[in-house]
Image 1 (cartoon, rainbow, N blue to C red):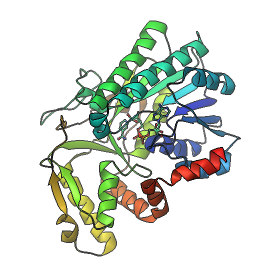
Image 2: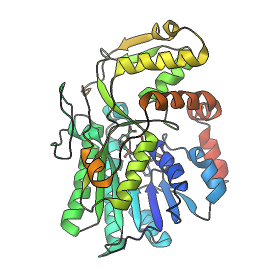
Image 3: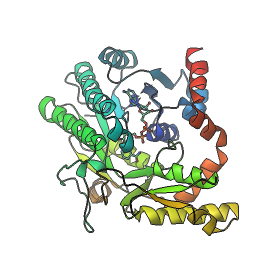
Length: 356
Ligand SMILES: NC(=O)c1ccc[n+]([C@@H]2O[C@H](COP(=O)([O-])OP(=O)(O)OC[C@H]3O[C@@H](n4cnc5c(N)ncnc54)[C@H](O)[C@@H]3O)[C@@H](O)[C@H]2O)c1
């Protein structure tokens, strides 16, 4: 059966990875279809990320719809109005710290929202098998690693935070819809992403902006926690590879093969910022402060991405030092974007462009 790939519903397309994905897709010559971006614009959603796409393709090949994935009627209407044949589901509450202080939103969006979207797809697609529901998830569902080893697709789920538990639950629902109803679906579990348009509450943009603004650099605990960092464009490439070549019912782990202790990463970042500003590196490293650890802080994540490499021919391509430098330069050169995000005035941009 040939896959239809004409009308892609992207949920959460105004967030960090979703908006990078839409930029990526707009550059893919093999895709000539329509992109429907459904996002309810939480604090993390910023359609200003997509101003260029709106300008170029708005109303022709790109359609922004302010909608909540928890709203069954809106989701059903989208499937029908745009004849959706592919879903790439990014929308989620995504910040671990916020999940610790307020887990309810995570349960509502990540679990109930994913369920609602799956139901809408099942009801709209019925028995079609030329369609695909691709679910974006995280390596955090696997819990924490010791000093050795890496998460594979066979690693048992052991989520430790309300965020990872809600993502684990959504993964199980997607799998169950494939097994029970035959809904054509794939899942990817990816390691930590970095790159442009990331909301500055996350570690890398927070450190970049604090360094550039002369503020302290807060590092959790003893700084020895390890993450496997992947440039966001490489993640987008992996998602597009799975959407095109992935096998229905399969899960693919995606990672950067790039493990860094938090403290080493912050020191590298200090060196790179100092190269750009011409100030001494000590000026930045002296501002590193170890702060009270996050409760339930996973010690180490590492991804074995052998399956997607072997079966689909994808591999991470951006060298970390290069990707980090480009990210620092991007934040340095996009101060209007940063200021709008920080003072919330991008909400005015939304009012002007979508409601005014
Ligand atoms: N950031 C990472 O390092 C990383 C790594 C692996 C997996 N992921 C997963 O990738 C996806 C995207 O992550 P991100 O970092 O871009 O997140 P983000 O927080 O930057 O963006 C999330 C987007 O979803 C939207 N959204 C939230 N709730 C919604 C709802 N109920 N209805 C419609 N839209 C809603 C928000 O407005 C926002 O635009 C998430 O599913 C996340 O779990 C992220």
